[in-house]
Structures are given as structure tokens and as C-alpha cells.
Amino acid sequence: MMSEDTQKRPRTAVQIELERAYARSNELSKLYDIKVPDDLRTRLGATCFALAMDHSDAIPILLSYSVPAEASAFALVRTVFESYIRGLWITNCATEDELHAFATNRLRPKMRTMVEALDRAANTGTKGLTHSYGSNWDALCAYAHSGAHQVQRWNLGDSIQPNYKEAEVCEVLRFTGELALKAGLCIASLSSNQLIVTALTKQLDEFSRESRADTGSEVI
Image (tube, rainbow, N blue to C red; front, side):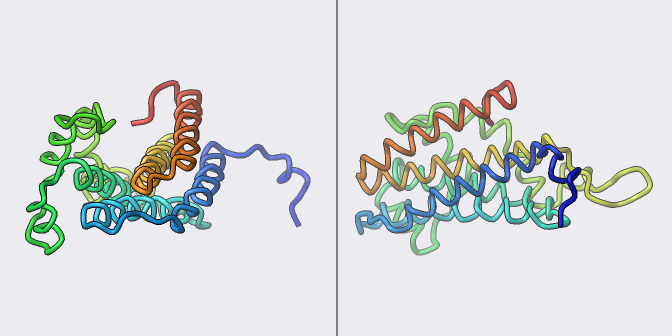
């Protein structure tokens, strides 16, 4: 039984972000029942967006353990970002030859190549990706591959143990949450379901306002 003091204890910023993440995941799970066209471009793109959402769902689970698996959660951020970018590139930029080469594991486009192609493409709604990529990619890779960013957060004085700041954990939840919503919006657009597109656009706008209010700046 919880004591009266425990019941009155205010929620931490991480707990609030976790609650938001689970609520967001529950809403986005409804997208798995919608239908999309069966052409190769749509199937490959929708799969990448679904993967971005799936990886994003895993992050709050890892952070909810009694001893949070923060290193693993942080390592997944690159995978969420990369899945989303790959889905955008497939649906907006890839040629037919590139689609078939990718589908048969004969093409592995570099992230910079995909991001630059998206920034050059018209009407993709992805303006500014090059800046976001340039600002974050090295750190995302470091977290994914036990680089300096990850290792530094395990060295604390005379001990070796995780030492992630609350603000950093919250930013991971917000950043991947935004990507999951954007990936879901892309799937809804591929399905031509305007009701879901409108609902997710509204959710994304509300999410952006919440994030600015919480951090005083745009989400990465």
C-alpha cells in the first residue's frame, strides 16, 4: 500500500513524458488496421514508417523498468530517425530502379544522400532535414555504437554506472514521439484516409506546442 506521502509526491518530468508516450502509442496503434495501396513503393515506405513507430514504442518500455535501460533506449533513437527518413526517401525520392534494388538488398542508400534528396524534393513537407541531420546524426550514432556520448554517461567519479540527466531522457521521449507521430501521419496519407490525416495533424500541432512549452524551444 502506498503511503500518504508517496501518493502526494509530484510526478517527475520523466514520468509525465512516459505517460504521454504510452497514450500516444495507444492512439497510433489504431493505424495498424488501415489499408494502404499494394504497390512496391507504398509497401516499402509504409513498412519503414511502421518500423519507426515500433522502435519508438520500445523506448518508453525500456525507460519504465525499475532500473531504466537508458543506454538501450538512447541507442534506439537513431533507428527511429533512420526508419522515418528511409520511409520518406522511398515514398518521395527513390526511382523505380532504386526501389527494386533496395527491395532486393542491392542498394543501401546513405543517410546524407537520402536527407539531401528530400531537401531538394518539392512538396515533401521535410524542409530543414539537412539541418536536423547535421545537428544530431553524430550524437545518434555515438549512442547507437557505444561512442563518446554513451560512454561519458556511464563514467561518474570513481564509479561506472548510468548517469543520464532527466532533461536528456525527456528529450529522447519527445524527439522519438514526434517522429512516431510524423511516421503515423505518413501512413495515414498513404492510405488516403483524410479523417486520420486531420486527426494526426492536430495531434502533431498539439505535441509541438506542448514541447515548446516544456522546453522553451522546438523539438529537435
